[in-house]
Picture 1 (tube, rainbow, N blue to C red):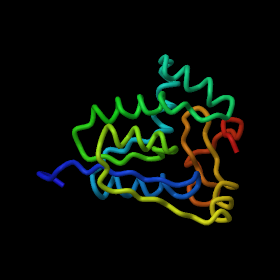
Picture 2: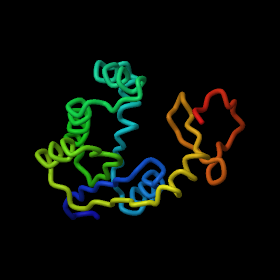
Picture 3: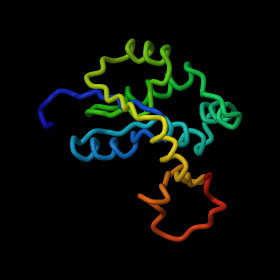
Picture 4: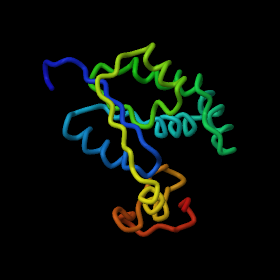
Length: 154
C-alpha cells in the first residue's frame, strides 16, 4: 500500500463472530494498524486513567461504556494514526456510528453476519484470560503453556 492513500476500515459483528480472527489476517495481509475498542478500554483501565476508571465503573456492572466516552477514546486514537487502519468492534450503536461519520470517512466495512447457533457454540468454548484480556478457544487456540483455570473467565 506504499504511496497510496490511507484506507479506513471497520469490522463489525457479534462476540464470537470471528472479528478477532479475521482482523489478524487483514492486519497482516494489508499492513493495517489494528485498533480494537475492547483492547483500548482494557489498556485505559490497566493504566488507571480517568477514562479507564469511568469505563470500568460501567463494565463491572455489565453495562456498555457510554457513547461519549468510547467515542472520545476512539477519536483520540484515530487522530494519532497516519497509516491505514482497521477499527474492530466499533461502532456498536447508532450514535457511535453517527459520531464516527462526523470525524472521518470510512472506506470499507466488513459486517460479519453469523448464525446465532454458531456464535453460541463458539462462545461455549471461549476462555478469556482475565489479567491480560487475551481470548482462547478450547479446541482451536488453547493457551500454549499450562495455566491455572482460576485466571480465566469461562
